[in-house]
Image (cartoon, rainbow, N blue to C red; front, side):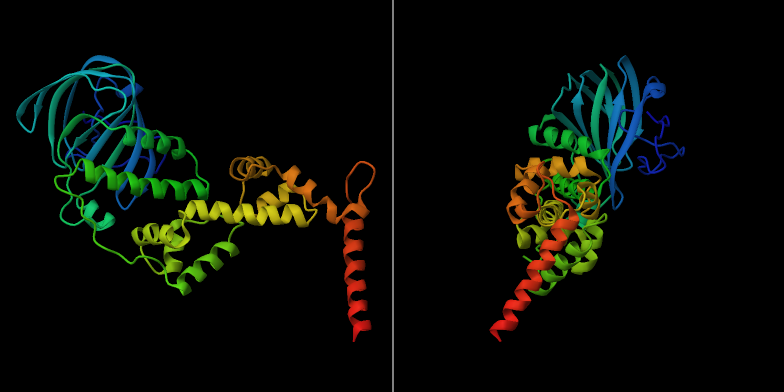
Length: 348
C-alpha cells in the first residue's frame, strides 16, 4: 500500500510522505501500481481532493499508516471484501458499493486484504487540525473510523467535483472552492468525532466593502478572478468570504461573477455592433461558443436573439438582408446627437 503512483502533473496529489519517502494513499497497492491513476483536482491549505482509478484485482494487501484524515467515496465499482487488522484489531467487512464512503482518521494503521472490481473514486485528504484552522470548527475536529456509509449527498457532490476538477477557468475554480468548503463542512459534521460547532463570523460585508467588491469585479471581468483576490479586496479570509459573500450578494462568488459577465456581454450585444467573439473575450468568456452556451443556459436567450431585439433602434440603417453596417449606425447615432444638441440650443 505504499507504492508510489504515477503523478500526472507537477502539482499532483502529495499528502505527507510515509517513513520510506513514498506517498501513502488508502488504496494504492503493489499489485495495481502499474495501472493505477491518481490525479489532484484541488488543493487548499494543505488539503487535497483527488480522483483515482484502480484496476480490478481478486485480492491485494493494503498496509499503511495514514498521515492525514482521509475520506474515500466510491463513484464506480465494488470492493467485495475487506479483512485484516485496523490499528492492531481484527477486522472483517463485506462489500463497499457505489454511493458509499469510508473515513480513515489520521494515524490509522491498516493491514487488510481487499478484492475489488475496477474502481473509480473521489478522495479527500485533510491535514491535522484543518477543521479548526480553516473551517472554523471548534475543537480538534478529527474524523472517526467509518466503513461503507451510504451518503447520497456526498456521492453526487463528489461526482460534480470530479466533473469540475479538470476545468481551470476562473468561474470553475471559484465553484470548486465553494463546493470544497461545503463538502469539508459536511464531512466533519457527518464523520467527525463530535458535533461540528462553528465559530461565529461577521454576518455580511459593510456597504463600503460590498461596494469595493462590486467595483473590483466589474473592472476585472475581462480576466480570471480568484476567490483569494476577492478575499484580499474585502479584507477577510476565504472562510469569511464564502459566508459573507453569499449573505451580502445572495449568490456565491462564482454565480455573481458569471451573472455580471452576462450582464456586460448582453449590454454590448444589444447596444453595439462589436463582433461576438470580441465581446466574449472582453467579458471573460473563453470564446463565442462559451458565451452562447452561458446565455442560453442562464438567460434562456442566444446572442442572435439579443441582437435581433435591438434592431428597432437601428431600423433606418438596415439593408435588405437585415444586416447593419457600423458606418451607417455610427453616422445615425452621431446625427441624432447633433440634432439633440441643436434642439437644446434652440430651446435656450
